[in-house]
Every structure is written in structure tokens, then in C-alpha cells.
Image 1 (cartoon, rainbow, N blue to C red):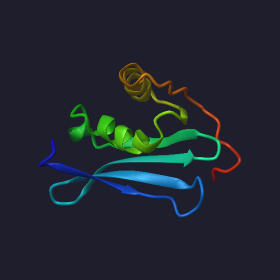
Image 2 (image 1 turned 30 degrees about the vertical axis):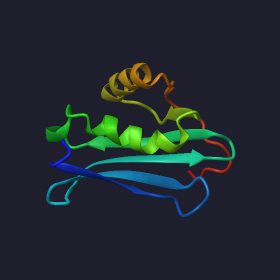
Image 3 (image 1 turned 90 degrees about the vertical axis):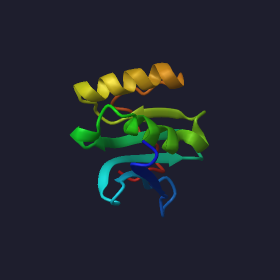
Image 4 (image 1 turned 135 degrees about the vertical axis):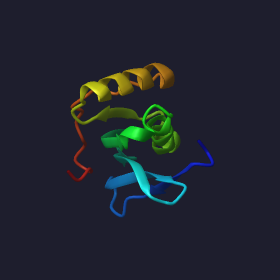
Length: 114
């Protein structure tokens, strides 16, 4: 995986604004993206969206992107937007692995821009 893809994090320009972890293939083409928000004042994180191209799924890219996003604020309370059936399986597995709850339809604090 490490020689085939890279991960880039884009930080929010506004407090608690949207941030992204982009997953790029060896040709620097986008093959996945995780959008999220973090409010350091309220200690909450919110996964807006995660998507990995179908032919790249099952290789741990979404998992790695989520770990990258959460690394500096793992002890925060996290939630997600509405989850598809694939999303429920993914976040269920991540809850078990990371020992962090990812309830669907979570709320954002007043510092987060919709």
C-alpha cells in the first residue's frame, strides 16, 4: 500500500471548518477522500463524508485516512453524517478497532460550519 498511494491532509482555514484527507495513487490521482470537522474548543469531531474508489476498496485506505484524521484528537467525541450500509459496516469495524463510537447522524457544535 505505501508505495502505491499517498495521503495528504488539508487543514481548515476557519476554526472548526472542513478538513480533508486525500488518498492519491502513484500518479497523484485522487482515489479517495475523507472530509471531517474538528472543534478543539468542544472536543468533538464529525466525519462529513468518506469515499474510496470501488477498485481501491478493501485495502485499508479508508481506515488509514480515518486514523490520519483522528490522530491529533483521538480522545474527542466523534460522530458521522448519515451512513450507508457500507458505511455502517465500515464504522462498526472502526468502532471495534479504535474503541471510539461513531454514531450516525451526529450533531455538530455551533463552531462548525455546515
